[in-house]
Figure 1 (cartoon, one colour):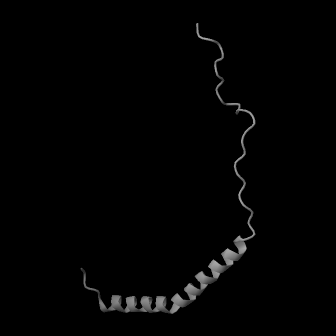
Figure 2 (cartoon, one colour):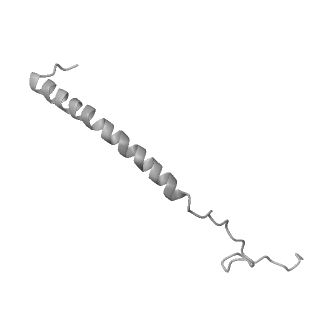
Figure 3 (spheres, rainbow, N blue to C red):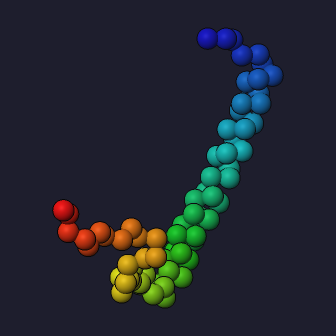
Length: 69
């Protein structure tokens, strides 16, 4: 493993400190977003089931109705 320079260690401490300071705000944002999505999602209607076709599609191959000889 490579040895880090003092400059790299200083930047690492700064970044980790910044993440520690911002983490509670990010947690709060995730919590609020979860609650909003739950409340907003309650009014959605149930998805419709697929409809059955009353006749075969136009591109379906036709069956041969002639009797074999």
